[in-house]
Length: 451
Image 1 (cartoon, rainbow, N blue to C red):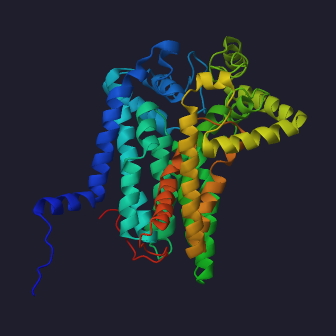
Image 2: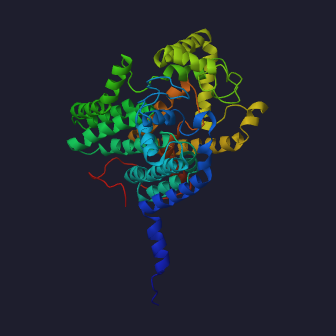
Image 3: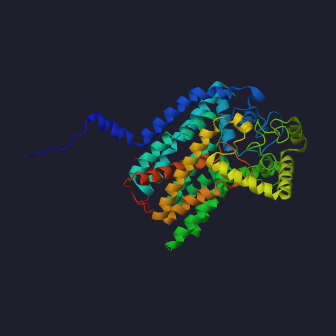
């Protein structure tokens, strides 16, 4: 008896083709994010503290640029020239303000739409990493997982901040790092260095994984008896050239070397002052909210104006280090609590804390499961290709260190969420018995980012 092959209807074929396209994933992810922006953008229009919620320090610096005062005044009053934030986002916001008006509804919608686009575009390098390491099927599911990932949808639509652009850049840099498993032209190495520089000028925390990625490339090239010093020197030179204008500006303005930003002393003081009622002492529910930082403390703001930003940051750092030296056990315990918070969202079950954060139980459950799935995927990669697993592990190890010793926030660590989504999908594929590609590093030169 002759049997015919099962046929697929034209409609199902078109749906399958749409679902398998990287650009379709981007479009769906963008549409969802823009829909959320439609609900959340009014939050930016709170006029309190001179529109403080609208991009916070980045917004204030952008407003200063717009009104001809230069890169200055990151708070509510004139405080003079600043290196509180790196330059990319303040200038981006200033450009939007110039076209659509300072602190207007149109500016809020444009900036949130831009962030939504950035978040949606992260699907492309994420799928490229997945395709190179794990094959087309994991790439497809990882792309859709990021498009529908709740935190990747909510945060870019809620907070105007460089984190989301940094997440795209870090994912792209991760893909380029894998790309150097194959011979690359001089242009690739130059572009790699410039991209690192741009990422550092967007969100310097991304540079925490630069030594790990450079070291991984050097080790892999050395294993194959290939030259690694010249290409990494080229990348390093490109990086130095890309950031040097900002470094020179800071030296001319402050008469000292300030690599990217000057606020580390204050960041340390915010998280290391004896207050553990909340994850950061400037939070509204904190018992010491009126004592830490210039955001809601008039005396601290006046002190910043009196001594200048550099001296104020130095004083804050000295207070933090003095407290840590006097209370080493406290610092050790709180550091562990910060580590737990970064990976599980858990800080406290104290009733007074939960009254301020009623959604924490659900957030803790989601974050913990997400981390566990990531670890499942990482363990599987370790079993199948140790070199690939080491690269992932180094990123997860080094990226949050600065948060562990300073302070944490609910939107911290979001830059590495795309890579965690990828490993979660790969870990689930093991549990569900999918047939997927064993992670390998070889890929033809010039591999495309899209289907």
